[in-house]
Amino acid sequence: MMDSSAAAADELGSTPEPTIVQPAGTTPTPPYPARDLQQGEQHQPPPPPPPPPEPRRVVGEEVQFSEELEDRGLLESSTRLKPHEAQSYRKKAVWVSWASIIVTLALAIAAFTVSVMRYSASSFGFAFDATLDVLSSAIVLWRYSNAAAVHSAHREYIACVILGVIFLLSSLCIVIKAIHDLAIKLLPEVDDFLYSVSILSGILCTTLAVIKFMLGNVLTSRALLTDGFNSLVGGIMGFSILISAEVFKHNAAVWYLDGSIGVLIGLTIFAYGTKLLMDMVPRVRQTRHYEMFE
Image 1: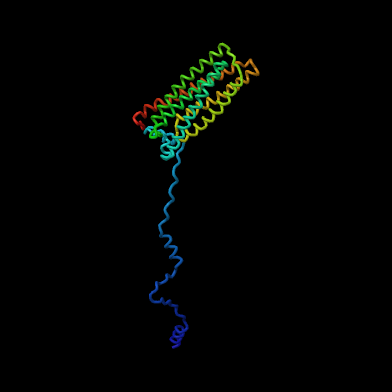
Image 2 (image 1 turned 120 degrees about the horizontal axis):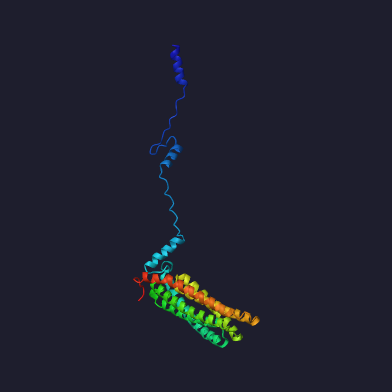
């Protein structure tokens, strides 16, 4: 009797577990929302990896890429420049070539006059180099006379081969003349006319060389760079005439400086022409089937 009453008392005193009543028409809330959210995030697919950076070509790969373009008869400028940009730079190369022809032709005539009147080996060497500059600029003018051949590797290499031959012939003439003047101990004469020609030729040829180097780098043109090198040599020879004449004026014992500079310039032109032919003759043969000009 006491047991039954105690059991009844326990049932009356115990607290029932609460029950959550969900209103009709709503989605039941999960008992552990934070844990379920973490599990849902774990089941989501991972984000895609970032795209790999574009590979940068090293120097060796750039050279190989340039050679592949040349094997197809194109210069590297075909991938660097847009069509209208290439034509714009081509026109600039034509105008610079015309300006170089006019300027260097006038300097060549003046230098030949100084060489004959003042017996200057350096003046003779500069006159020959100025004549070479006229011919090289004419070759570059032919190289870029055709708008459709602005990226033609075959036309480029033909121009370089012609330049190489002219370099060799001119260097032989310069060296022979300078050695002859050294052998007979020819003493140069100095006057204001020689100074004027030297300063003018040095400034003009150096300026032309800088412009040709800039255009040659943009158009990846070995012919333009060679023409720029020839103009640079002309500028150096112009200043060398001034230096040798001034030295001889103050010290007649250094009479050989003028002829020595002529020999040095001639050998430099000869070495450049030889290297140019060694590089370009095989390439002319490789690209003869890819003539991109009319």
